[in-house]
View 1: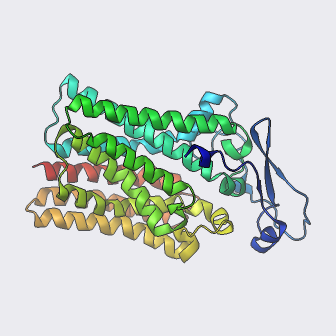
View 2 (view 1 turned 45 degrees about the vertical axis):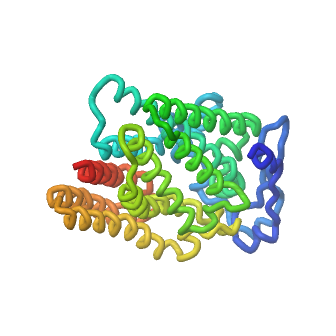
View 3 (view 1 turned 90 degrees about the vertical axis):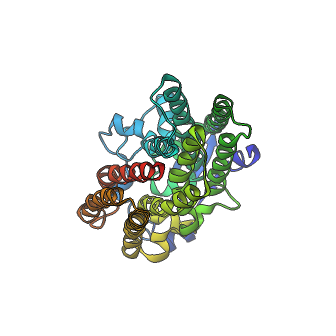
Length: 370
């Protein structure tokens, strides 16, 4: 893996591709003192469009957004704040919540000091460590796309060096695997199931972002893999930590990951230009933004409605009713924000709708534990 991470030292986009795609001036990236620097090369201004206003960082960027790793971030020079930004803390809560759902589904979690401590360590493994590893790795392999879509991000802007990024990837990965092994010992497992789940999730993250497989090149496979990573894997870890991971739970959570596929599509709309330039078949590229919007909300809503139907058929009508009640506000925010403009309102939509989706996960977990 280390050899792959150290492979690319320069990127150069040809004028021919630029003219054909009508993108901003071609971008070249070179290494100066082991730092990535981005500059525009000379070109005929009559042949290309000016850089879109939304490609520039906010004039008065938010420090809060910078720490969370979302757009509208302040341009930061502090290396530790940049390191945190690369891990995208805004993406940790679904993983942390997945551990809570798994613990609830086990039926064996008790509010004792030991069980709370175990769950916190499992959350640290799933969120800051392995999700941080995944996000940093993804940014590293997305540096060519970001040089087109978001050239002010930490890696293409040169705010953090190549060696610093690679070191961060390895530290987070090894820390996550170490915590997974610790949890197996703590839980008294004869078979280190949590460690193997962590290894599997880390490998999935790698092949999602890195060539030659680079699952994210295919909108269906890549987004489902991402959805499973955010819903199934932390649930499995939480349930294995406190109980037994059963085949029916594995199937149910994998089906629930179709909703995660829809959530993953939300992030594809802002990267259409770069994805198209580099041949990535995200769903907005493959089907067009208008059709992709409906595929996105359909995957989210139909999955949850199907799970509500499953709970009703399993003789748990109150849980089914509660899950249905949590679907309705999601549909409302889809029409209010996402379907109007998935690029402009992506953060507002996710902040408004996703809390109801993750509450629905907990309802499902509680239903399966009884």
